[in-house]
Image (cartoon, rainbow, N blue to C red):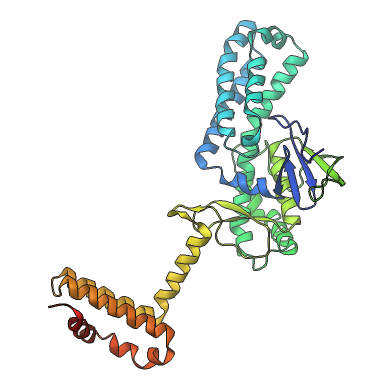
Length: 370
């Protein structure tokens, strides 16, 4: 039995298998804290869609609860449309993006089918109870994602980003300071519908144990903690805290702006995703390149080289020198620069002399064909 098997994950029920520093969702392995970091990347437009359609369902439910038969039947297509719009947005939000989409759509088809109407109209029937439980969950999921995203981004920007060390102890101190801050809770209390799916650092869980093949050796069996969550807010909050416990934490890339999970003690700046400026490079590679360029600009050898070559190009643009003289002067400047980088004696004594503007032009003229 592999880890994450038969978890029965759906919009009403989320489960994680926990083993050492890993979490397992639908048989796929991730580092602890993965989902808490990834959900922070849901863009503002998707969050607005979720909250808008969730609000529609909330108002429609109020009308549906007390509606007489004809009104109830008339409202069903409207509320189904709102549910489908929420699901469209949820497919962009992990772990919902990893669920069986066809299974969820079949559940909606059955729930809103003509054959189910009589059961839904029956007061106290199991079908009616499940129906309203389902709508309540779908209405609450957007609020859970929104409230956690606000809290997670605040925590990363105001506390995690400032840390000099990324260890369990430093993360614990940061979490303690943030989540005991009056400013933090004042901000959270001002969010829309703050009392529904409110952020918490003490997630409610239901825990049991199951058995599975060891991820390290299929011939061995291990005990695995299986945890179920009553709502997405508790799912993300648990994953955040469990990740911090293992010294894993979200961080925001300084290049692309996306959140990613760090799993070692290094102070992060860039993620390993594709750089938006150049898809052939990762943000980490692009950041290293830009850092090298910045260092080059401050280096006296590069600084003088940049000054001279810029002047040469300007003289060419203004018609003061020919194209051939421009090319040869730039080539000579590169030769002098490279020699200075390799020879400290030349850099100290001869580089500035050879890079004088008129000296470069004089030497270049000797080499340019008449």
